[in-house]
Image 1 (cartoon, rainbow, N blue to C red):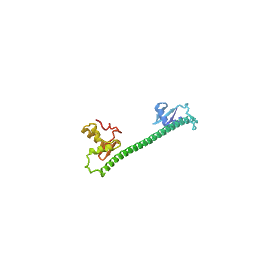
Image 2: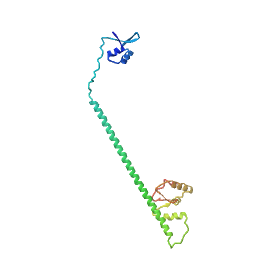
Image 3: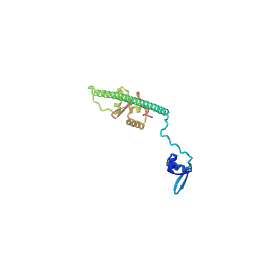
Image 4: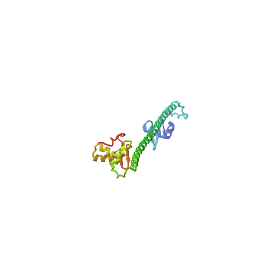
Amino acid sequence: MKKMSVEDAATFFGVSKEAIHNRIRRGSIQSVVENGVKLVVVDEQTKAPQKRATAAKPVSNDRYYKYLEEQNAKLQQRVDTLEGETRSLRDQKEQMLIEEKEKLERIYKEKDEQLKNILHTLSSKFMLSAAPSEEPEAIEQSDTFEAEIEEETPSELVSLKKYLKSLKISEKKMKKITLKFKDIEDERIVRVGKKIYIDPLKYDYSDLIKK
């Protein structure tokens, strides 16, 4: 048995001093303390391990390269999938914009037609009122004026008030429904000044008029 310092033992075994201390704590090698210095007890017959060769044996990288290629193929497949989903979403968005544009064009076209019909009716009434054969008349009541517009309008427009009366709805209920019509913007509703007209032959108003 031979006693040597921790540093010499580390050189002997070809390891670090910390490794020697760890072995002492684990009890895998013996140590003694002499004159306050810790010495490692080493069996001289124990051969010191050979130092590791600096040149490592070349390891085949084929398996590693194959793994990288597989991962790369998976990533490329994911990229292709995401690009396809992106194109699909873009096409859907463009289609939605086209449909909304066509819808707005239809709404404006219907509004224009309704406005033309009402203007034509008003123009006809004023022309008849200005004819020489007719004598001046007093301003008519609101209900009479609305009735004439409804009879002359080709789109079968009828005033909301008259339509509600035909349904035999109470006055209280009529006021609530009228307020509802005033507060919403709907292509089925035609407004001339403060008057509200509807076309029950063309549109369904059951969602706005509930008995």
